[in-house]
Length: 337
Image 1 (cartoon, rainbow, N blue to C red):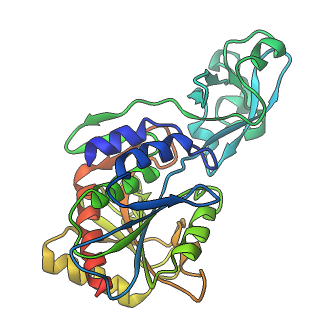
Image 2: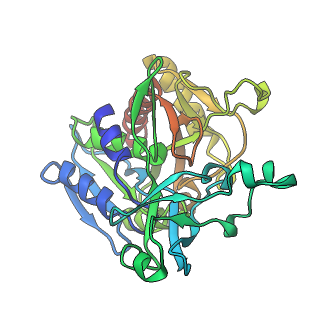
């Protein structure tokens, strides 16, 4: 499963441009389950387990990642862009970007030697940034990047420290890897899976996949902000790397079922799974669209804690990914019954 996390992290796929991720996932599930692609590009899969499910359960993870989209080409060959999804301007400065066609560029920034006054400390406005792809004119740049082309952070994947990994797009390729591992294993019962699109720009794919599957319960597998850093107050750390799967009780898009929240902790205790609450009401995920679909779906989110989310260097603990995998299967078995 952790090899799968690496392979998925290195693939490129912003919201609405998930083709490479979709092709990889299909190559891993074809022949192992029933699946189809819906009109938006979600992959909907059905995997038979050891016995039928008394209640229909859906598990979801999103394929897309944050990135950029080219909006204009300047006369000097640099490329203007807009973010796709929530990216802090701070993590864009001087970063490498790779477009879907392989063109590489650098987000330009005025050097410190030429900066004056507030320029030395002030973060530039996002709409003032550009990508330098090495072209010297608009005509030359247009051969390599077209308006509407998308790109992502160019970043490697690395294991370091004690069970730590770093790479781009661990949000939510870690969740996708867990779903793939479940589909390629012997499940306790039948289950539906959604590899959804366009989460980062408004939870769009999950709305249609939930409508199509029409489950009674949904388990969303995500990553969430771990702010377990030295200068952050204890009550604002959200969750902590190495302390297990982080279960949400509320975020900005969902107030979760107390029954399911308690069930997750009960199952974790019974099965020896490391688990922790997500202790700050922040962010949102596909649960926000899923729990309101059709006549309503009882939904729970199980998160992989992740430092430096939505950057070129997300950091996770592999033991937490394993905990999410274990808790997801335990919840599936419980809710299906």
